Amino acid sequence: MNSPPSDTAHSPDAPSDPRIVGNGRDPARPLVPVGASGGALGARPLMAQTFHGRDPDTVAASAICNVTPTRCQARTRLYRDGRLELEGFPVSEISDHLADEAVTIWLDLRDPDHADLAVLSDEFGLHPLAVEDAEQEHQRPKLDRYRTHLFLNVYGARLNTGTGELATSELAAFVTARALITVRKDDGLDIGAVVDRWDASPDLTRFGVGYLLYGLLDYIVDGHFEAVQSLDDAVELLEDQLFSDVPQDMQVQRRSFELRKSLVLLRRIVIPMREVVNALMRRDLHVVADELTPYYQDIYDNVLRASEWTESLRDLVNSILETNLTIQGNRLNIITKKVTSWAAIIAVPTFITGFYGMNVPYPGFSRQAGFATSIAIMVVAGIVLYIIFKRKDWL
Image 1: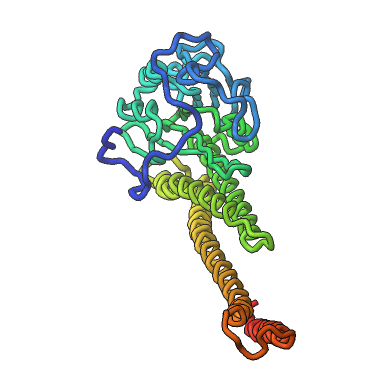
Image 2: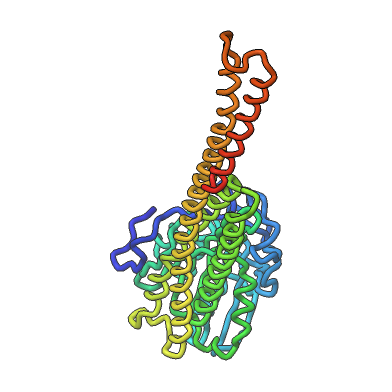
């Protein structure tokens, strides 16, 4: 990982290396047709659908470029004075449009490689360190500040309710004065849903890049909330299993570890978002207009809630693990107590039959009265012990 620039704004408490969806990259992949998926996706199986079940090849279809110097799939949009004017125009024309101060550009690259990102650097004059961070996977969520732009790295999240495994989708973004460039490193995050969110509030597009960035972050943070809610539901089911009439110790133990692992991963991508959103609202960055401040504040509040919820769920899962072990110990104690009580009851007739089994004469030896006496003593002693143990709740 590159050393961050001196004026970088990021979260200091965020562990690195959250998992992502997909396999490793293959930088030596062959050239692919224009409009098809390039980058690592050209060398590995494509995901059949995004986290929300849409086809990653066709989402935001009107914005897909048919002519692009990149080998990966690209999407473009142009807003002029707050109105959508162009979609799917060639990437090579972006620099021409940026000369107009009334224009706001969105460019999306789907899993690009080094050559594709070089096109970005040429078109927008991006810092080499930021471009390298966009190319590398497993970056931590952060916001880096450069002289002409910002670099943002965030993660979408989705919980598999069947397995309890959390899948994440990494996205990098470059934020300039008049352009938002998104770089998706896999197909998990549904960029079409982000575009739908932008189109849902056309009156806010006049705020340019600040609004586009708001729609992107709002969608991502909502995904974090969905993941936390799914984890909360899974923990509730786990609590029901914990106190089930039929012991499910192994299932509870296994599910607890799965959920705790997912919560640790979710914490890694949620906690740093507090610093990311807070840094974006700084006035010296000139990203968020005053009119957009309440919207970003709402995102920040949601990030705080998701963070606190994640922490409480992690503590709850740890409590469930400890409670499950305690229940197992209590159950073992009850079983041991019952077995010991029955052993004591059985020991009485064993002693009596052993006594009467001696090869020496004793009262009642070789007589029916002796046999009847021994039977009576065994039965009476067993019943007395049973009553005593039952009253003490040992049986």
